[in-house]
Structures are given as C-alpha cells and as structure tokens.
Image (tube, rainbow, N blue to C red; front, side, top):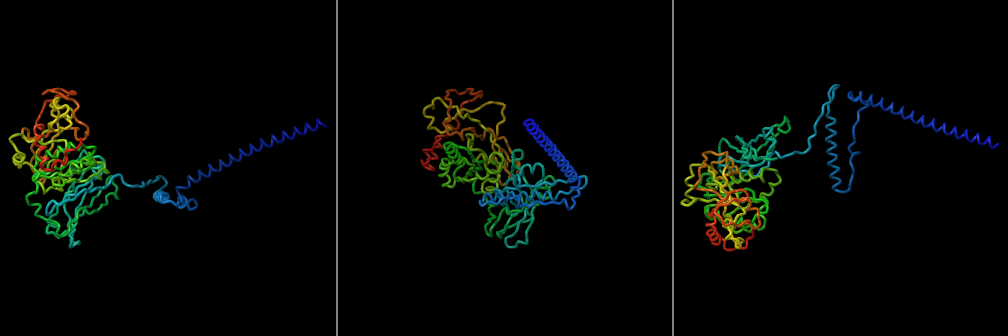
Amino acid sequence: MLKMAKEKKEEEKKSSSNNIMVGVIWNCADIKFLMATLLIFFLLATLLIPFKPPFLSYSYSLSSLSCVSSSSNSSSSSSSLNRFLQNKTVEQQQEQQDSLVLKRSFATVGSAAYLFIQMGAYRGGPTTFAVIGLSSKPLHVYSNPDYACTWVPADNASASVSGQTYKILPDWGYGRVYTVVVVNCTFPSPVGADGSGGRLFVTATAGGGGGDAPAAVGEKFLALEEAPGSVNMSLYSAPPKHDYLYCGSPLYGGLSPQRVREWLAYHVKLFGEERSHFVIHDAGGVHPEVREVLRPWIERGVVTLQDVRDQERFDGYYHNQFLVVNDCLHRYRFTARWIFYFDVDEFIYVEPGLTLGTFMDSMSKYTQFTIEQMPMSSKLCLKEDAGKNGRMWGMEKLVYRDVKRGIRRDRKYVIQPRNAFAAGVHLSQNFDGKTTHKTEGKIKYFHYHGTIANRKEPCREFVNATELTFEGTPYVRDDTLRKLAGSVKMFEAKKIGSVLRRTRQ
C-alpha cells in the first residue's frame, strides 16, 4: 500500500512538471506569433502611409496634450506649449509627399537680432535727415538690408513725399552682434521747412537674406515727428552757439572721481567756459561720486550728462561707442564749430606761442585733423613727491613719458561737424573736405592710460631720474602738465569754489 501511494505521488509530480513545461512552450509560441503579427502590420502600414488612405488618416487633439493649472505661471507655460505644438502640427500637416520625395518644412521661432534699433533722428537742413541706430551685423554681411524714407506733412497726410536714402556703416569691421547704421534721408525739395510740421517714417527691410521672402517685407516705423512751429530753420545757417564741443565716448566701470575732476577742470579752462560745451555719456561709469564731480559744471551749463546705460542690452563694439559718437555728431551738428573726440584719460595740449583759438583758426581749411599721442606712465612718480603724493593731482605727479620707438600709436581727432556725415573713434571716413595729420609741434595729447579706472593711489614707484627704463619700457621726465596744475586748481576754485575739495581717488 505504501509503495502504491508513493508511486502515485511521483506520477502526479511528473504530470505537474510536464504541464508547466507545456505552458511555457505555449506562452513562448504565443509571443512569437504576436510579434510576427505586429511586424507584418507595421510593414504594411509603412507601405501604405505614403498613399494616405482614409482608414490610416489621423489627427492629434491638442487639448489632450495640455495641462490645466490654477497658477498663472502654469497657465502661461501651458499656453506656450500649446502654441509650440500647434506650430509643429501645422508644419507636419504642410509636409507634401509623393512616391519618391519627402518634403520637409521649417518652423521659425523668434528672432536672433532686431532689424533696427533707433537711438536718434535729426534734421540736417531743409531737405535732409539722419537716423542713427543699430542693426544685425550678420544681416549686413550676408544680405543687403535696405531703407526707405517718407515725409508725411502734418496738415495733409495724403501729400507724402519719398526721399532718396543711403546708409553709412561707420564701425564696419568693429561691430559684433550689432553694427551701427546711419540712414541719410534726402528729399527732392524742402519738407516741413515752413514750420508746418510733419512726420518722418523709415521703412527697413532685411533684404531677403538667404532668399527668405517673408523677411523682405518692410518694417515701417516713425523716426521723427515735428510739431507745427517747432522748427527754427535759421539754426542751419546761423553761426554755431559754441566754438568747441566735446563728444565723449561711453563711460563705464569704476571710474576715479578725482581723475574725472582734474580732466574736466583742465579742459573747461583750455576750451573756455563761454565758448564750449561737454557731452558726457553714462554707460554705467557715472556712479554717485562721479556725478557729484559733474554736478557743479552741469549747474553752470557747461556739461550735459546723458544716461545711455540701456544700450548695454545690445551687443555692439565697446559699449556701442560708435553708436554714441555718431548720435552726438548729429545731435549737436549745428551747435558747434568744432567737435572733439578723445577720452577722459587724455589731456589736449597746445604748444607755447599758440592759443587754442589761433591754432583752430589755422585749421579752418580742413574738415578734420588728427592729434599726436604722448603716452604717460601710470605708475612712476618723483621721489621728491613721496609722502605728499596723496594730495597731488594725477597730472602733476605722473611725469614720465613713454618714448619707445617703432610703435604705431592711436591719434584722436577734431572735426567740423557741418561737413561730416558720420563719425569714427579715431577718424571720420564720411565727410566733405580735407584731412591733415601734420599737427606735430602745434598740438598733442597726453594719455594717462589705466588711470581713469584706478581708484587707488597711482604712484607705485618713486624715482629720481630724467631718463630710465621701467618694466622694459624707456621713459623720460616730462613736466609739461605738472607746470599747469596750479593754474588749473585756481581756475576750478574761481569757477565752482571748494565744493570738490574732498573728492576721493
């Protein structure tokens, strides 16, 4: 009995094992069959899709792909996602196919750079205007952007007039994402010269870069509006208000208030307070202490301070230096006889025997002239000044001039603005008239490179020599501006008192 029971139990165990094996084999067979069926289905679908029979058509429901959120941020994100998916779905539906070719389409999103960024627009006379701004540099390199000007009279909008337009790219070779554009508009006859008022419109196009037809559509914008009676045409023929006007490059960084103080007092004295004006452009460098240095001169009407920090949004050369100097040229073109272009670490000097007035009169036959540079050390000071150098001005304690030969040094320039159409940094290439560089022995500028952004005491080495070599550069002692420091201090005290006596480095 025991033997029979044992045999029966072994048979049941064997049967159960066989059933499990069969189940596994059966499941594997099912899987293989299912995979084979799916493979055949997808092969058929692949062959049939190009012909798009009705039973294979499909569509997506965007509502099923979006999420609903009670927060505004989630709602905004959902909306943006929906728009993106809609654009992509439209693009997919626009794909056209035949039996051989799959046509692809491209969805555009946003823009890499603005077509035009206007800084200013100015009348240049009865028939001409200048519009100054930035534009995409790659667009100007690889395409041919164009501009068109239209004048619309205030009293008769239907009598609009089209003008001839040409563009100037004064910073060509220097631009970055953006390049500077000066758009000159010239009309066949006077527009708005009778004081009736009107509006100047400019239409900018991308020039169809790369064959993109939609990009060739013009963007029309209002560049300038003149209210009736607001234009005084005598400005364009009368003698200018100022003999000399300084157009400053953008100031940025941590500038030294004391260096700015010295520079301004020196040049107001040189140019003459009644005969000159200074335009300072703040690109982030006119911090509160520098502003306090400028304040007394602003209050006297000698300085105009413009905040141009917003230009930092647009990636142009050197804080958009070319943009700023060109706007300054056209903004003050008819208010000054001469415009000076140089920096706040540079000091103009006229040789003994000449005054600035007599020298400038001798240059009247030239539209522009350039000025030779005298580079000065920003570290070397006289041993005799040690201990008292903290109370001295930079121009009186930095007295060693770099005399290394064989170096091409930058020159700065002065121009008669009424004959200029665009400005450069070291020279204008767009003007009517002649240029001279032969000004040696008459005028020069001392350049204290690196001192304007140094808020520490500049003297690093105290020496007692007329000639020496320091850090591989030969220097000679030059007391030219040191001798003038006393008279400049007296001039400042006479004009604005002692309000700046506690100015810090």
